[in-house]
Image (cartoon, rainbow, N blue to C red; front, side, top):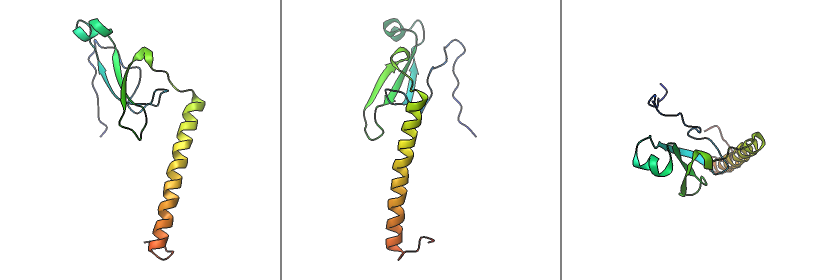
Length: 108
């Protein structure tokens, strides 16, 4: 069963989704400032996103809709390929460690 997030009918839908890669980083959370609240009065009636700047860091920054830029298809493709390459190198290193432990056998 897929988790579901319900958004009240009188709220705008978020422009970005959880896990989406942007120029600022990866979207890991969001909150809404509904109309007629103090926060909406101060910052505007909109979504605010928590963005993980680097997956190897604890640094999280917060941005509003108009502060986030999406990646081009080429940038997104390059990021994903780089991540696949990184994981492939980790898998290869683990296979070497397994072979060393099992005397060359990797079938368990």
